[in-house]
Amino acid sequence: MASMDIFEGDAFSIIELTRALENIPFKPATLSGSGLFGDRGVRSRTVVIESRDGTLSLIPFSERGSAYDQQVAERRDVRAFVCRQFKKQDVIWASEIQSVRDFGSESALQQVQTEVARRLGNLRRDAEATFEYHLLNGIQGLVKDPKDGATVVNYFTEFAITPSTEVDFDLDNASPASGALRKRCQALIEDVEASMGGLATGAVQLRAECGSGFFADLVAHKEVRETYLNTAAAADLRSRVADEVSFGGISFRRYRGSAAFGVPTDKAFFYPEGVDGLFEIYYAPADTFETVNTLGLPLYARAIPDRERDEWVRLEIESNPLPICTRPQVLRSARRT
Image 1: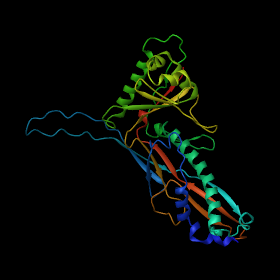
Image 2 (image 1 turned 60 degrees about the horizontal axis):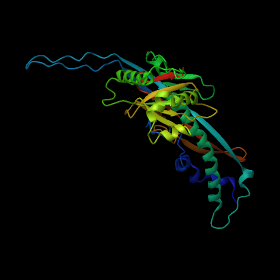
Image 3 (image 1 turned 90 degrees about the vertical axis):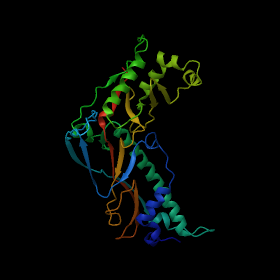
Image 4 (image 1 turned 45 degrees about the vertical axis):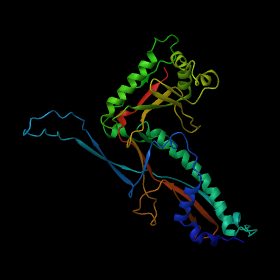
């Protein structure tokens, strides 16, 4: 029969539980499964970001033996940001494991581990939803508190960057001018390209995460439907509306959020894809002596026994993430009308 002493073994240390948590299959959401944000572990809770107000300039031809063209000094702005913490817990009571007995080839330890894994799986699902929430705000240049939606960090404000004006896609226009929507997409792409500077050398691939109303009117738009006529994808537009459609050089995707968060129905958020270093998420180590000064991991788990009355064991998960868009001036937003 299992007892509470079973939690004193190495199988329930923070290292082993964190490893077990990593082995639980990850169910990717829209952004967390896209690989858009690069993971970076850091050794402290504070991340220092340097903004350089520099621009790329062409180097003119020089006569042999003439003086070198002098590089103009850049204005540097340094900010320190704290990795925000989220954590959640579940409790296993002594009464829940006291009836666990050895049977067959499965030991009491294995049965308790199975129950712990089940509880950790539930906690991990909540953590995955929280990560997705942070990434959705990250493509808007924001860090928000999931509790009340309050803005914790606004990277536009922090680095004195003026956000671009929201674009009106005029999708409710019953008689749009010919080619107006395609021209609007092209203008948006060129605007983003101009703001990227030297961050991208090739063609910019723009993606939009769309609310349901925005996406529905987009795929119903005359220009979009005419583009897909006589193509294999036309069947999707005639029957069930697909979750993604490409038009005017932009990949539009209906963002499947939840009751807790998502893209407002009449809005769309635009960002470039395939640009190294544009989106990153930093992870600080957990608040324990075992992890101090180590590179942070996305998620930690630990078991804390009841030392006073020996009645329960508390399972905890913890993460200390900081999502960052290193060049928020490339982000755009649009409204349906």
